[in-house]
Image (cartoon, rainbow, N blue to C red; front, side):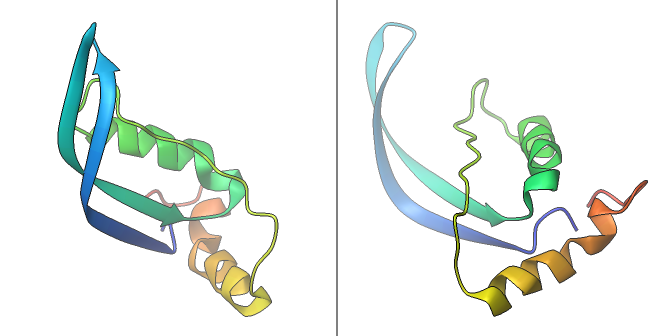
Length: 88
């Protein structure tokens, strides 16, 4: 798996300028937990599947956290991180 977990946060209001117009839309945010070495694959797969022309896809660094949780992420994404690993 490319990500160990995804959190979907509904009910967000986004305000932004798009093509010269002020927009206000209801959106959903998703936080995907993966390892740094898989971030580019996660971004590529998200862009491939997302219906927006320019979805807000960011990679944010993790500077620490629960060692047990970080180890769980590593374990869940181990197959995808291996050379020739499965994307999915």
